[in-house]
Length: 405
Image (cartoon, rainbow, N blue to C red; front, side, top):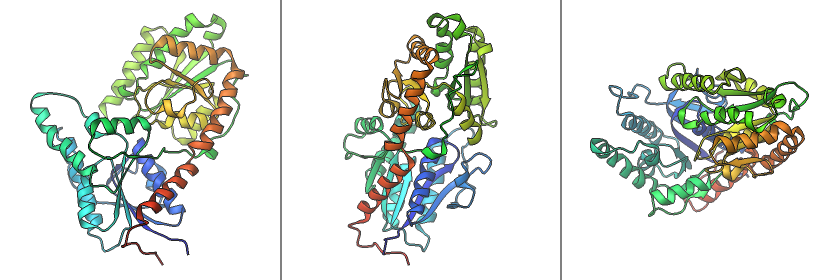
């Protein structure tokens, strides 16, 4: 009889970020493997979440949404910790026996789970929270001190720590030198969900696609600057055909995304390429796949990205990728084979884009190589198989283990 486990997930809130996608993919893969899965979260925004979070395919319990998200526009981190710990407490107090519980993003929930349940606790570290927080002095430093201390202590209480890239693993080691080495588990994408349509080589327009949220950290300015640099790298007959489509998620309730888009529009005007830049706001999955099916390549501009789903989606759709040569994309893109890894400079990006714009056959070869690369190493199937192996290994020595009937 195949062993079936009761597996829980504790996640702060289910939106549309990479962390939420990872959690839902992990839950889906484990459920498809025959395990019973429950996700506990403090907030579920049904108007701004992935379909798997609200379509009933996975059991999702919302606990703690009555607690504040912030206080007087501040204290976001303590509120997030409090809400997630409350969700963890509710999970721990249920009468159900959980064999394994996954936590991510908010490590401070781990002590509750470790002390109040017999489950094996796995923490998935997307990136150390200490490094994501603003680095300031004065009172803010004292405000962050207990948060940073508790993050380290809590992570150390997990039975196993997973990371999404070697880059994150290196930052973990640098930030928490006394903790043991984490285990690498790359996220994956559903390769079959991306078509292998033509690259639009027969069309008059050469489309280059930038995917990501309207967030200054995504560095989309670099894509616009690179587009402007194409005027010096390509004959006018080719350069005039290039269009940059910027497709990004934009939460209408948030101030910063709207400001970022306005800044990008102003930059395109100043650089004289406004007529060549098209903005697509919050495309759904169908629109995104359509954009991927018609573009020549994907431009991925974040620096020191922790992992990055964008390049995987592009390669799964048989598209070459031009990305910054650091962080997670440096581990997923094969330079010169599935795309180009470049310094974060307009001239370098422009030169790479010029190659793909002027040589559609090379762009197509890179796209085919990218799809094969992702299918072999970064597919959702590969992710699920390794996750299942990790879970089995984690509970193999657990005397509390019992099979579900």
